[in-house]
Amino acid sequence: MSTDILVQIYVFVLAIFVGFEVITKVPPTLHTPLMSGSNAISGITIVGAIIAAGSTEIRVATLFGDLNITAILGFVAIVFATVNVVGGFMVTDRMLKMFKR
Image (cartoon, rainbow, N blue to C red; front, side):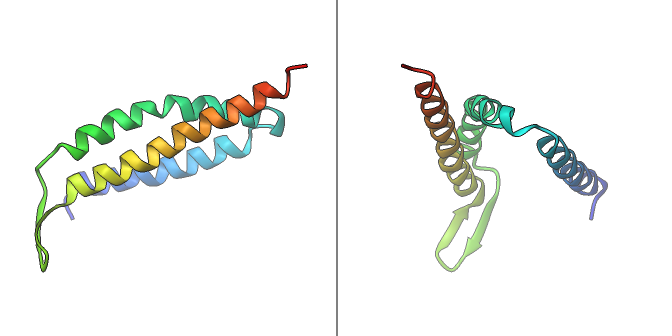
């Protein structure tokens, strides 16, 4: 393994631990508003996923022909990020309806 890959794996594992610690420290009363806001911000993820889906850098020869792995993973990321954004707006809408008379 090259040093770059090891550094990326190290940063990824640290991000998992830090994210877990931060999320577990949030009190339940703040969890829904913070999560719905962060889900809306994840629209930035959609932009990155669109860029990845348009990339043609990594191609893998398979039984089904030459597959563009980057485009496939980019499409999967678009789907998941869109579900996340829509879910965040649905939670926010439901939360705001609780305050209407």
